[in-house]
Amino acid sequence: MFRSLALAVICLPMGAAAACYGDAGTPLFHCTVEGGKTEIRVCLQDSAAYYAYGPPGRAPDIVFSRHVQDIHMTPWPGISRTYWEELAFANGAFEYRIHHSFDRNGELPQDGTLTVTRNGLQIAELTCAAGTISTADFSPLFDAKEESGQCWNFDTRSWGRCP
Image 1: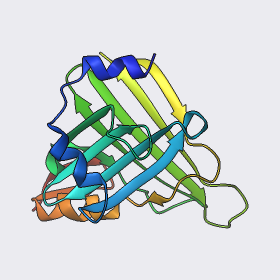
Image 2 (image 1 turned 45 degrees about the horizontal axis):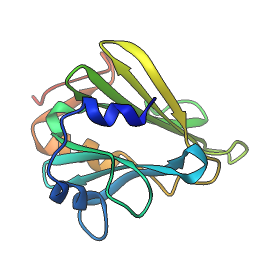
Image 3 (image 1 turned 30 degrees about the horizontal axis):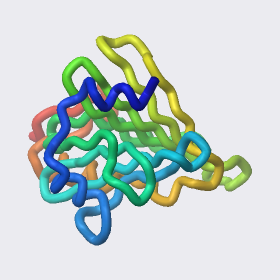
Image 4 (image 1 turned 135 degrees about the vertical axis):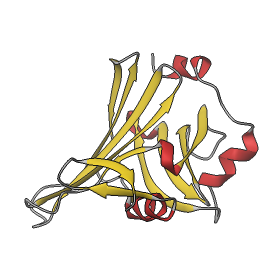
């Protein structure tokens, strides 16, 4: 079901896929799902974040980018023993939401999920395979959003123009 989504999204030319591979860009998230048959990658390059989904070591099935101002990111609020972050890419009627968390005491394993919705209805949820999250740090995106003139308001839990 999820692979069929590749036909329903607007993708960038394959040159854009290079942003999440090799030395290009800053990795924000990476894990494998579906028994290692598929990987999820998110990276930051200049003022854009890239989402890529597809088989490891091959061209992604889905790849697109959004300006950092157009990505919804919820940073960890700074309380509780579980550190978590979430970001969401909109792509037409689809939204790709990536969530990761880990226990700051190290007692629970790190986890990550990809939830895909179409017109607000969930159509897929994939969980990262245990031990496959090699990158999970959205703080460079937070910094890039601030550099672009957006500031996070912890009281309203929303992004707005910086004062």
